[in-house]
Length: 375
Image (tube, rainbow, N blue to C red; front, side, top):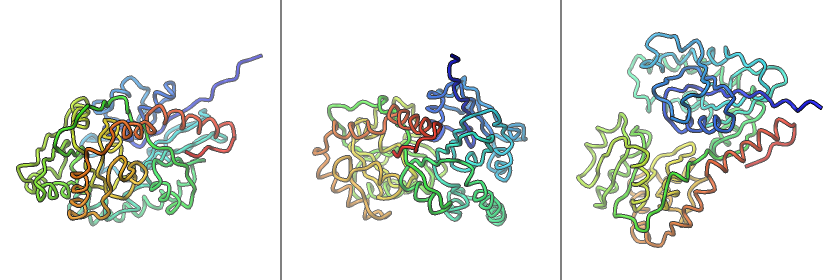
């Protein structure tokens, strides 16, 4: 009797030119399916996670466009065509890793397409916030709405191409249902919990680990600790750094980008992490939890799935300095009551091995025509 042939799997990701959370997920997909090629519109081989070094990465024709590394955003209208040009004939399973374009990949007839969705295309569904984030000049802001209108039309047209959507959070699942009229399951992204170790005691400083963009609302924390006279360490870099430094008092220390090992030590030593922005999911709070430390988070977005108020940290209800200050006062009064073991046990529920088990089971169930499991 001939052995049953294993399905051929392909992974499709939007673009591999940065080291973000989505690219870490692609690294985990590569661990799960090491023989699966990774198709992507463009790749910067000098700026990928170590987990993807040596992977079979196959960029599209966009890789040959001039000045791509510096001006990849200016080629925005080309990405849908690039993704649609990927030849996926012969693959039984397509896993798209998408916050924009990969979900529009064209599978062969009879194949299974599962989209792991970080969010529906942000720049067409939340245009004003996107334009604010990008800090575009006058001409770009004038032209961009016309480009985004066409992209929105393509986004809706291609929304039905995946057979199943798996969202990274409840908030993203709700967006998929609202924008596309489609249902989605939720499987939380993987957190490398084992990289972090709790310490017997913490030190007297608060911590932020973030890219310093305006939409991250880091200024709320900078102003709050300034008024309260509490020490804050800020890890990360970005275009909003100079503005934040102008706002900051001497009790705020900007550390720039640091190695993962150094950041892990800061997580374990801080009194609490501050997470002032609204994110689709947000792995940083769970990394702090993995190190046994609580989180102060804005009560919105992915934090609603990851923070347990009074157990793994505190919420603040409004995106204002005053609301954050109230939460910090609660933390000052009760920091010693948080149990590092309980907090770390909570983070373990989001560990990468949990993700691999849940997502792998989902793919198997969908491919064998069973009802897909819910996370």
